[in-house]
Image 1 (cartoon, rainbow over the protein chains, first blue to last red):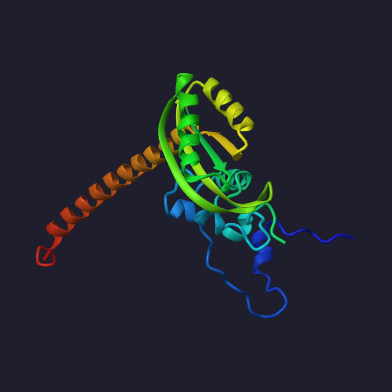
Image 2: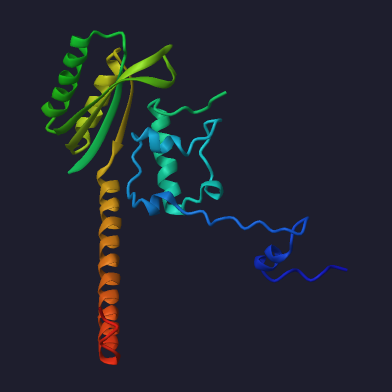
Length: 92
Length: 138
């Protein structure tokens, strides 16, 4: 016998997970939208560097809160910068 | 006409004078093929993010070139055979800049539209306020 599935995800969010307290995080927002950056330049290592964690991987959208169009531009820019040794492919 | 950005790294072992010579030489390659080198940006010596040919530093130069694309092929061929150029990257940027421009104008239009509605709304609110009680206004 299977239980009826919850209709939507919002109901699952309402359920306190584990303890009694629910954490309400501030809504992440896209930095590129906020700062009105229309073109992510691959030469801007300082900006790109903030989306490269220790390991040298591209920071996922779910962590940074970047919107999809900007994440796409960002990923492209990071890959270009890697090609010309402005950013690392990997860091041990 | 297409706009390209050609970035290349010159080996740090080359002399300062040779770097200048190489840069003019390469820009001449592009211009002789009929392209226009609109900007030459010397980013200077930088640490490489990873070693290339066992080198850890490099002299970065960026050309902004307007042309048809055939010059780029020649320029890239020349850079491949030049030992002092350890890495190059060509990016076509006219389409991306156009897209960025589109976003910018769209945002400007949106801002203008919202400002127009807001100002008209606030003007009508002010009008209502003025008619209701004039003491409250200042």
